Length: 298
Image (cartoon, rainbow, N blue to C red; front, side, top):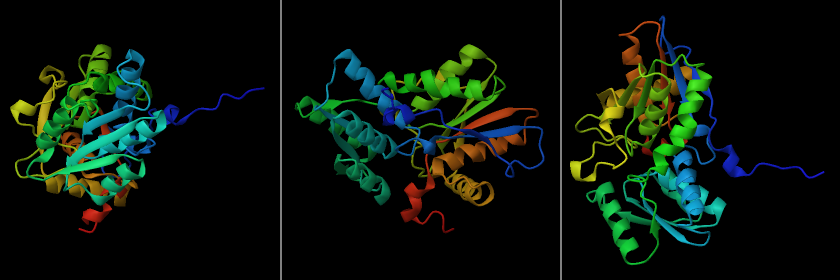
């Protein structure tokens, strides 16, 4: 008898949704954390990475052995490097040089070529360079910022999982906004189930530098972003995000990154304003990706 064993791609998604036990305090609300760090490459970005490569392959746009190019601030790059290795592609990643060493090492461990731009050039410069390289025939840009297969991964996976695991009881969904694929896809799905569900997006306060959360200049606003799919946008401070991140580790045993801390900080703030709510937050990655920054020492 032949056993049909799963491959690594079957391990992406279907992450656990767990209840916070202490941070919320005495409340009629339930705060739930979706543990996306449990994906194979350690973040929620595994979902769109697989979706973008798989669907492009199915369309005939790319084939194994091709070189793929992407501008990334970290998690997407690690996820794409993993999926590229899994599916037989070569990967070139372009990112600002202020990314943590753990992120860079993870990308190269998966076999990706890494090109760095300066912190001053930032993600905007990385995106421009990716387009230039594609124009020169050096590879195919997946373009997570304008690729509808990005939010589709969350419309097909993350959103239905939240609806299923809350048994349709979710009232609020909170997500950091960077590329915006997560919030766009989850919002699109949840709103089809119940238009009353509140979708809350997070962006950094002026002066805050939080990996995975961006306030884009208008010229670089992701094409996949649709403001109509977000009911409210909150500004989160770096201090609040980092404090919540450290509290999650010490008081809940959830070891995550700074943007996930921001989502939980927003959930705790909302917890003071509503009653009998079921609030879902995205824990988008794991904390070991940030150890070298010293953020957990404070």
